[in-house]
Image 1: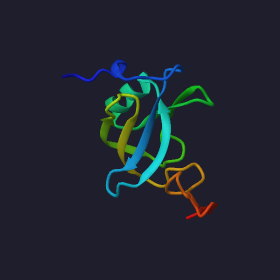
Image 2: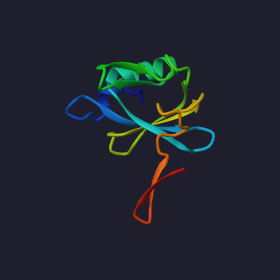
Image 3: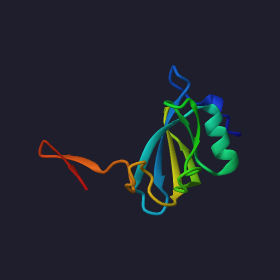
Image 4: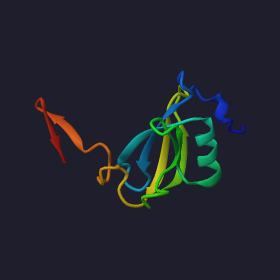
Length: 114
């Protein structure tokens, strides 16, 4: 059955969360938003493309930083309201320079960074 981005369940802003995971290690790298056009562009080009809510424009991961995400696998969850993009990550995924955006843990009631 052919995939149609219009069959996904987007929020009221026309967006769907996309979780980026390192294809080799399984590490969760980041979460960002996609709209139907970003989904289509990601699948067409193999370069993961998000929708920037703050800039209101497409954001091809690594286009300016060089920290690219090459699409390895594209998954849709069972409710069709969340995506998992398995990627080959070049450089850090987080805008802070960290490998993953999830470097803050809550342990024993305190925030700690890895």
